[in-house]
Image 1 (cartoon, rainbow, N blue to C red):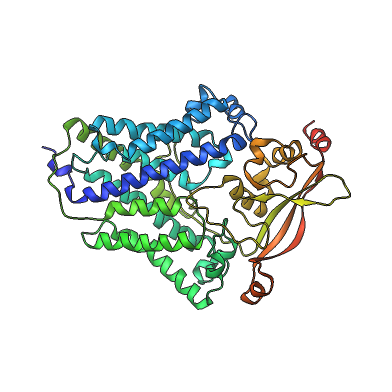
Image 2: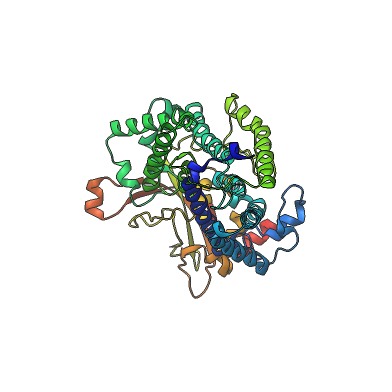
Length: 466
């Protein structure tokens, strides 16, 4: 009866999508486990407990409204890790067991995102949740893949790519005059080991890259819905582009997840699989109808003049709009945080795990892991208002030598006793030329630009809080 809903030629595609998606969930929960104490814990920069006290459940649905202790947060992280590993073997479960595992992953991670505040305001959080919700309805390996859910995954990928292409053309003239990559590799949020090499490529090649990007994001997404093998070729084109982005920078799991979605369009030889159970087929049709209704908001956003990036239109993070780099920063500034034991100095620099600091240090490979404090520091360098909710608390934590916050850093220059003063300066950073690199061994040149936070003591911060 439900044969028309089946897509047996996409069973390999389903296998790739679900197993890669489970791996991305695992990375997300590991990131939370390793960073929540300093960011969201009881002694963190923006504690979950304070957030749920002022924001009701209906505005931010989360299991953390019931309890928000560090032990509870760690329990959710470990449960999510266990469920992510279990999802790798959910193909052997009955359909209801499959749905239970994937629904648990979605509930737990949405609970984190909904109370994650500025640390979880990135587009790939909603992208993971929307893809994870659809995975609930893909079904295990012993039933045929449901075609409507595969279409919805392609529709999700379409919004990611086409939305990003539109916002680039609308948002910044450097995408239209093909000069965006003259700046982007140097000014992107988290440069990687090869970013300097990409930056130093000939400028005409950068312009070819921009043209290729426009084609991949504005034309290729429509081909995802074409007959095979055109859809597979379109998916392969997106995969190659995303791999290029992965080696040229650190964008957490955005590229990894986009590649995962691309597999939904890859056809193959059909397998002999039973049709969907009747009750499951009804759920698939209901979810398809739900997403057809939700499509109104992202379509209106993409077609409207005031297009915005990475917006969730509901508390469940379903039917979102996406986009990236609607504007390109031309000059790179970095926040350099320093401490001193007295007003006479000397001042010693704190080291961050991912963001540029020491000019001699090669930018590390971080993605698909996500260093949230480092990313927010990039935003603060662009506009200090991004740190209004947490930067004073961060400076106070350094002055008190608070272990959960210090654990977010790579290097603490005051291992024995906290400093008496801390400050933050803005520095202009540029990749070194090939000649400078040979002469100094440095990957960056930097020059001090201005004060961001003047020297502060604990007494100064206490007075401000009063």
